[in-house]
Length: 223
Length: 300
Image (cartoon, rainbow over all chains, first blue to last red):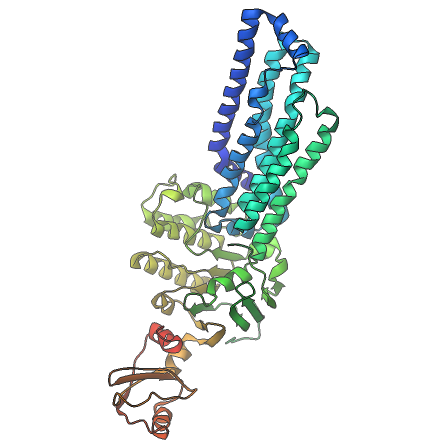
């Protein structure tokens, strides 16, 4: 049964997943090519200099990409459930409802993590070919909050899609903006290192919003 | 309505529901659906048919009252109980992003009594490929997919919300014939709504006729058809229509009058005479279930 739920979620999201994966890889390629151009024209020393002296890690362009991908994936996954109130079919399946929702969200999270990991790995592997370990990890640690923001965006967007009341959708949207704001306040690299674990906990706490939306759906709170 | 002392498959007691805090949809609605019976919930638009199904399936919390299915409170329905209930949503909603083959494999994992052959037997009639997506099918074809899945689930209780919505006569007939044969042969209990009463006549054993806020009648269809009568008579245009609780929805078109009642012809004649209403050519007319429904709920 669990496998069937994963497969159902995969059917809904697979097209979006591959588009997002290609997009993430295109961005990674763009960042790599940008770095490569600088290293070819001005030498690797110059890259080191820029990274250390100007705090430019050549990844700024992808700052909002994890959020965009997460929003797209959540819509692809949750919108079909709310079209014609198909969620009723899902909730009628002979499977514990809480576990069912966990499985649905878990599928989305796994897909997102796969996309994020492939993108991050591509950037990190390239960086590691000519940067010292410290600088590579600086790049990775500086981008991690953006990926965590992506997870937050996924949960909030899922909650918005599953919410039956338009007014509450707007409230959730505003809440989502407020929840994402802290992830993009501090531009300095590795500024979030010390509270990254708390951000991860915060992101997963946002999953509760999706449960609240489903609870309200079951209560009949719909437009 | 129950013919045995067995526990009813569905038991609704004193159900009250409102639109928000406003208009009452119904108050203190109570009914049972006995095992092995096909019960149709009939009512005009907005009388609460779909609301009742939403409450029964746990998608709407009633303002008061209790609903039990197989003796279990629906607010805490266990997965094993849901496995015994086949649900058809209004508009034959299914996972349209799946193909005929994928959706069968998906549901098969959830239901222990899954009957794959019942599903594919119906699919053969559709002239569609097993790899065709449900979203690319016509409304009629989608209805057959939804029906096939219900038959394959082999559930003890079938809950069908407006199964005839959007179907042409051919598909409606196919749906009704398949469902009737299945329900009778397997002794399934069916609770259904439809706005096309003709289809219900061919299918249901018992009916509940809902009006705004209340149940008008609840009895076996055969008994209803036998006891509820349409009376037709002519009367001068300036005479009033009968006013009596036992005479339902009297109406007039010029001199031609009609009225409905559970009373026999003599008693209706007595009421007309007692109210000093002149009448001629007093007679009864044979009715279909749709006529009974209109007679009971009125034309408007």
